[in-house]
Each structure stands twice: as C-alpha cells, then as structure tokens.
Image (cartoon, rainbow, N blue to C red; front, side, top):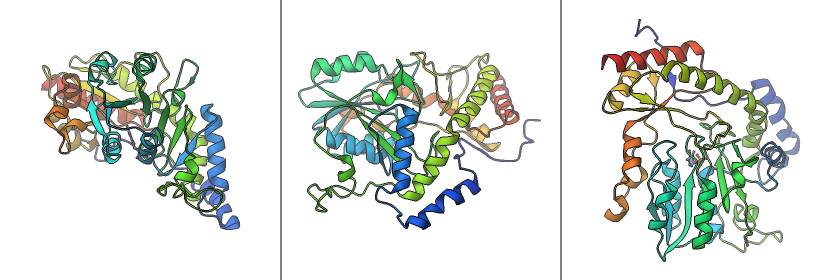
Amino acid sequence: MMDNNSKQINVTKSSLPDFNDYVSLVGRIWDTNQLTNFGPMHRLLQEQLSSYLGISELEIVSSGHLALELALEVLGLTGEIITTPFTFVSTTNAIIRRGLTPVFCDINLDDYTIDTSKIESLITSRTSGILAVHVYGNICDVIEIERIAKKHNLRVIYDAAHSFGISYLGKSILTYGDISITSFHAAKVFNSVEGGALVVNTKINHDIKSIINFGIGKDGISDYPGPNGKMSEFHAVVGILNLKAVDNEIHKRKVVAERYDSNLSSIKGIRMSKNRFNIQSNFSYYTILVDPMISNRDSLLSYLRERGIMARKYFWPLSSNLFNLSNDQKKSNSNAEYISNNIISLPIYGDLSIQDVDYISKLISFFILTD
Ligand SMILES: *Cc1c(COP(=O)(O)O)cnc(C)c1O
C-alpha cells in the first residue's frame, strides 16, 4: 500500500498562465517591438503589483537577489550587517558580494525568524544595518527590530522573498524597514519566471530605474556604475497573467496546508512552525520539524524521496556554515542549528491533489510510527 505511487511529486510546481492567454498578451510585443527597457508590459506589471499590494512605490528588477544587493548599495551600508543564518544563501551572498561582513544572529525556535532579544549584543561600532528574513511566510518582529534600529541608528532591510501578499497591522509587509525586497522567481508563490522588486520606505539619493540601466540618466549618459537589472517584457507578460491567478493559487495552497495540518498535527514527533503575529499566511512553504528524540529527519527524507516525494532540507546547511567565514562568524547559533538539522519542506502548490497530500501524510506517519 505504501509504495504504489509511481509518479514524482516535487516540492513545488511553478505557476504558469493559460497558454492561450499568454500567446495573446505576448503577441502585443510584436506590435510595439519593444522587448525590454521599461516597456508597456513592465509598466503595466508595476502598476498592477503596486495596486494589488497597496504600495505606492515599487521598483521591479530582474531578480530578488539583485534587489538585495541594490538595497545594501543604495542605503550605503558599510562594515557589519546583522543577519540570520537560517535563509536561502542569496541573503548572505548579497552581504558578502557588497564587501560587507555578515554577523549571524540566532533565530526563534517557534517561527524561525531572527531572535530580536539577541540582536543588541551583536552590535559593534562597525555595524551599519540589520538584514532580516521573513521565513516561509512567518514574519519577523518588525516593531521590535525597528525599535532596536532607531536606538542604535541602524538601517533595516527585509528579505521578503517568501512573503508575497502578506500584510501586518493593515499594510503590506513590504512597507516595513528602510527597504524591503521580494522575489518573483519561478519557485515563489507569485512568479514572473525571474524577477523581483524593491520597496523603498525611506529617502534615498538614488534613482533605482537609472541604476539598473547601467546608471544611465535621462540625458542618456551614465553618471553611476550601475548593473543591468531590468525585467524583460516577456517576463512581465508572465507576471501580469500570474498576478491575475495568484489569489486562487494561494487559496488552493491553503486547502493543501490545512489538509496537512489535520493529517499531521496529532503525530507525536513532528511539529509545525508557529506564526507569532496572527497574520494571514500565503502558504508559500509547508514545513515540519522532526523531533530527533523520536525520529530522524534524514532517514525520513530518504524514505520519502525513495517513494518519489521530493521533499527538501530547506534551509540546510546554514549560511554560517558556508564559505571561508571566520571562526567567530561560524560560532554556533544553537536554535538555527537545531531547526536546520531537523526541518523538512514538504511539497505544496496549488495543483497538488488532496489524494497526494493524504498519501504523503500517510508515508510520514507510517515512517514515524515504525521508526
Ligand atoms: C528566492 C529567494 C531569494 C532570491 O530571489 P531570486 O529572485 O531567486 O534572486 C532571496 N532570499 C530568499 C529568502 C529567497 O527565498
């Protein structure tokens, strides 16, 4: 009974628009012949995203990662950045690629976001900012982080790559921090194949649109050594169409998540993350934490993967265990180590059937009961 499902189920499945809708909208590019450089599709997507998210200023760029590097750049951050080791490596890479030093702060055991009670002891005279991550759609304690940042005159950047569409205290989570960034990569809840955005909530002396076009200003001459970070019209078309479907995608994911909850919550030995701020999740990920006293994460993962359930160790390894970081930086953050060593991301996407959710849940409970 346990081995009769022969198909492979991946951890996510990218949303694609209806093919005919795509052909019809993409056809307009042949009318204008404008393929990139802030064309009509880019402008339409920017307008529709701003209105969907309730944000006045949102700059679309070619990826979430570039948005992170740009955020660090336009805020002029230097020296040390306090950040989390429990993130996708992009967050840490952005800090290092800007020539900055990541200083890793431990995370909470219940929601996996940065533990704000441990931030202040990490601040030195070289600290210029905090780069925190809203993990799996759980949000950081943005109010406490703002208090600490004000007190110590630090800048705050949020990596909200997981948090599309999430609001807190009546406004988009992207409106918190000096800058928030998000990602529209194919694996995210909302995608434009590749893409991302910055929401700048403070005064900056830079024009992002000009920076991401090699720093070329209105006079056609570059006055800043900017990269190419523009989104093409083809990507924008996918974004426009996927945005129309995103509420339905999130709703279908909610049904999947609730089914997992009811199937798995009574199993002794696993638990789910807890959202501390009572927000409406976007169900971007569904993770379980395996209690190492009762079962074993890696064996459960192999058991699932041998049966075509391509669950993932996400996030493992910790960013602080990568690269040639100093021993001081590698100093263990015990909560982050524990979560990273025991967490599994289960498949979740709108089209995942309830039968498949039940099958995956049965495999998990069978494994844990017999382990
Ligand atoms: C996906 C992701 C990024 C990078 O976004 P891209 O659009 O793929 O460059 C950064 N941080 C986190 C937490 C992510 O999940």
